[in-house]
Image: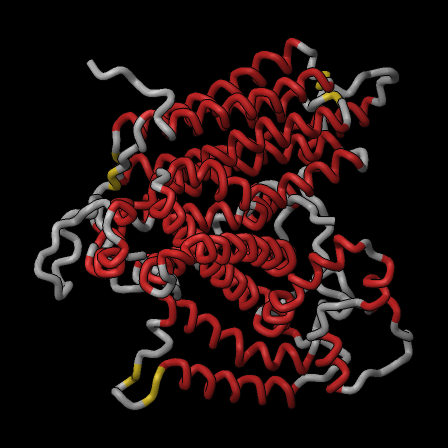
Length: 583
């Protein structure tokens, strides 16, 4: 079961996020500033006027490739593949539908990569780090675990904010995911399993989220994000973290006080939903371990083979055809991640120590770090014109791996094994960032082909792709009888996403460009999106207390209908059916 971990880390995330966003924006030497006008002075082009890249489809087929290659607006701000050049330069016009079909399949596979990396590698390592640092469940829940749960959304937002042309994609994705989670997910939970919501945590989370939405609405109205506003977003999240911790402390204090007095028949006035917020299911890959004899001692080669095997044949035989088909697609990703990302599991006796594989990680993981940093630009840089950085990393990693191999044993993890959790955290974070960069570039390319705004792509494809895991995990929790946990997760996670996604994304952009971030909403659609999110929150804020926090199927159906109406209005606005009258 994919367990949703609401609320996770920006303290630890700040160690790698600035690194990774700089990776994206600097991938092709693109200097991102507030506007995209004169930002390409070094290009060897005869000062070609910057035109909207979406105009390419209005040109003759013979001119499209040159237009894509010479127009600065068509250049991507990072990543490994140039998708627009692939469509218009390497596929003939007759095969344009085939190119789009391949891109869509690759987009879905990237979403699969994001989900597997976050769930099986990024989140377990963050959980191990929080355990190593001896953080309480509530502190870990609103810091580390929220970051792991919202990693795809956060990295997609950071990538999109790194380029002014795709800032609308970030806002559309954050707002779109917010509408999706607060209507479809929350409504689906109430429909599957009607329940009584925890009153105080619900009111606390929805009020904080409404404040965050109001801040973003104001930012859109002002059309810019200054340093003070970016810091304000992050400060509001810190205040939210402190509030959650204080509420939990007060709840525990009152509970201990009531137990001390032992007053019979006293109803419990506070909910323990904060305790339900954090799931302890942080299992890493342990394929088939429970089926091996206890006294059997594996050889080093067998340990390596088992550690790199992502398939458990016993589970394979007992699973459905759908699970097997999905597993076939996951196998290459899981094998690659097992080979490159170490995972530490404090809940296991051996802490997931695999001596040959972990020694191999000391060589491969740093190599992955330098080859994904700035899309590989740092990795191929030659030191003194003699030796590339990646070769130095391999030599140093091999030496460290050799010392570790001969100084440790297969049966007992070394004392510094916990450091592998930090290595795994950084490596998985850069894998997520690399996949998120490709997702943003593909969506922008599809927007160019279909002449769609970044906002509508963000509120549909990007929001759906990043939230699909949350939908399934929350629905699963509701069906298993934990609707309160799933419902509280709906609001807690998206608070982190919007505050840290907008705040940190704009802060890093301001740091790089030394100027405020300009936001240009895609016409009426951005206001429709912000208004729909605000209305859904107001509806829940008013209707849930009026129902005495008894969430019924009627409430769930109302939210689902609201989302369908929102999608219809958004698409009609995008295609110009709904528009403002010109005065």
